[in-house]
Length: 169
Image (cartoon, rainbow, N blue to C red):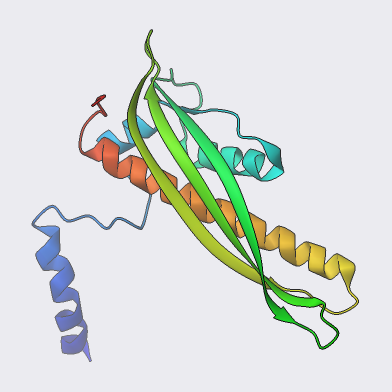
């Protein structure tokens, strides 16, 4: 059994020597962290925008650190009914959330230094004759979407900062 574990661990040791670091995992370190801490998140409209902003701020850290970059995010939702009861009422709903983000250097003349788009999908069931359960399911799905979007945006920013300070171009 121990020889089997050693064989499975071999690729991880081989990659460790070449500077490989997993993209998804613990919080980035070094240059990425110091860059992320200097990002200030702008206001995002609506309730889910507020939740996304809070989630981004928690992941970026930087409380008490002078901001060097402004992150502006536009959030949009699409809703698609995927299932129906026999009487025609919806039984399953799919939500698509899209966040277009723009990173600006917050100098005297703000310059766009990076941009991207994050998209996440989630779905929930609509229980028959249970309004509050359906409402709670929708809220939970929206919170999961916000967390997925925030994680994706921060990972992309971390990869960008790891390559060096973003420059306009």
